[in-house]
Image (cartoon, rainbow, N blue to C red; front, top):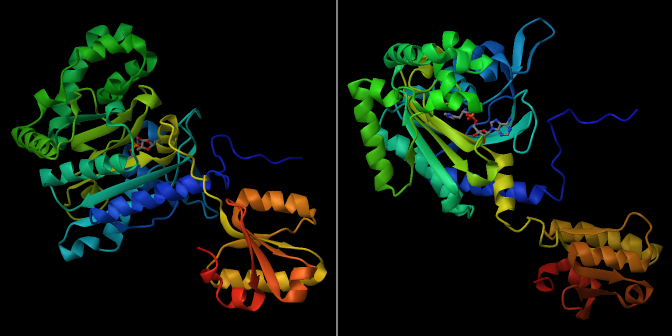
Length: 422
Ligand code: HAM
């Protein structure tokens, strides 16, 4: 019986991998430019990290998390996101001890049991940053700027991107705002979708996230968080916007933006791309000023964001960006003719690779014609080694783009291949 991959979890094949590698390089370079250092956290954590950190009542924890007991019955989870893990590591390793701001970035797979569709998978990859230890509104703007810079570097069309921005206030502001939302939605509850009727009781903030058409008119008229936040949060948000404007980042204020994870406080934002449709964000983030304390650390306000790699790949291919595999993958394809040449060729291949020149040969017993075709597809040069060449102690190097050929002394080529390969 054939064993297939798990629904929503896909392979990235060698022809796609160069594009992913290039993206990863650009992401790492952008994050490093803004002073972030990489952190690699485990794929598996104690399940309670997310139920406490992300929130018991969030969709991510309630419906989407992969939870399983280990052999001793300890409840574990495949990480659905990385912010809680990074905060756990920050506390566990005392990264706050320096008294400095911790600027950390990550790249890697996350797991959510969602309905798979274009740009939404059960194993997906996030890139993200977390800046832990400061409440400075300039830092919120800097986090948005690193995202904006990355999109620019990747050549994304600014006009097709929208940065949505909002503040949801601090913890103290939350209950009065929830109350205001309850008062607003209660008289219209019969018109809301079943999920939202339930949310009305549990967490009316989540109603603002609902995409069901029947809920939209009630959402549009809902009280705005900005009108329910305290003076300090309002002032913070004013300053965030001043810095964002100073950096020339275009944004729209979106009073319905609340984000789906419970740890957020104050600033929240999402970058949406036209190509993904209205439902899905290219990236999202915000402040989480209480999370470090909630998970047992010292008071340490923080801000960050994460984006989905799959969505970035989608948007970039929608814009007709060239696929990553346009260049031949190899420098040299060795074409030996006969068994003596094959043995000599094996030595030559090993030597080329030790000189840092990528090289390969045929292991499928193909004909000369077929081997040359493969060389033409996969390499810049064919190195042909037949009985005549071998007898003369030479190799024939063919430039596969121009067709130009030259004979080179085998010893010379082996000793210093860089002289012949431009
Ligand atoms: P999030 O909005 O849940 O936030 O996810 C961030 C991004 O991950 C989304 O905007 C989307 O691009 C991508 N994403 C999420 N789920 C999927 C999926 N099933 N398939 C493909 N892509 C997906 C967070 O995870 C927060 N930890 C972000 C953050 C960091 N906030 C502060 N710091």
